[in-house]
Image (cartoon, rainbow, N blue to C red; front, side, top):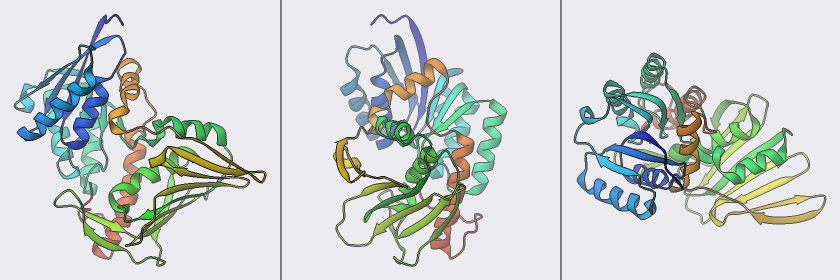
Length: 327
């Protein structure tokens, strides 16, 4: 493909998630040479990120450069990405905006750990007038986009995510965002069911916590949402989406979807996307300043509702003045 334009991207944080996002950027086929400036303070992470980027680059000609400090960023970029952990995200965002003008921005989830940081980030984004999305990416998976088109606005009775030993605290936001995407309706309420006693445990990332348990919610149009993580038993994760006349059961890990309709059982492939496979999303942002990731305002509202539910378990009350230690 003839490359006739240039685009620029700044990325803050190139740990596991950030390095996988770099793989997505390496695979963009949009007719543009992409110049990527990255800030990652841990040398070992830089080495892994470079290796992963080069694994996917091929002959595209995109260029990756690591800057020593945020002051070394260019004055402007077509896209900024902040892929640090939640505690450091506002600081990273502020540093990036102090150095550079951004046209578009993608933030990783979980956004922040304090309610005050959401307000501060909202003020920053409004001041700089940046189009901003949050990487709760199931809304851009071809499988879920196809399913939403198939549902075609019909009422969804329930969305049930169930499995064993998966972290509701750090991963629940993905499925709540999915429910909002499928129903085009915001989540209105969240509460913990007493069916499964919630248990707090240490997350993989040091300094953060996770929860297994049963989180229930509903949308503003009464779709019931159930996030169920059983403690100790061996149960593969499934996502069930129930309408009046059909129930879909998704096995994301196996890329399969099953459903029963009119007494007949059906099975077909389901197309999911890994973090390293979002090149079409970033291409759309670079070329059209739009995408189907949730926008910041919508996602921030959902994050705050989720944080209140998690703090109910961490502190015994939903007070958002307490830090919510999830990422």
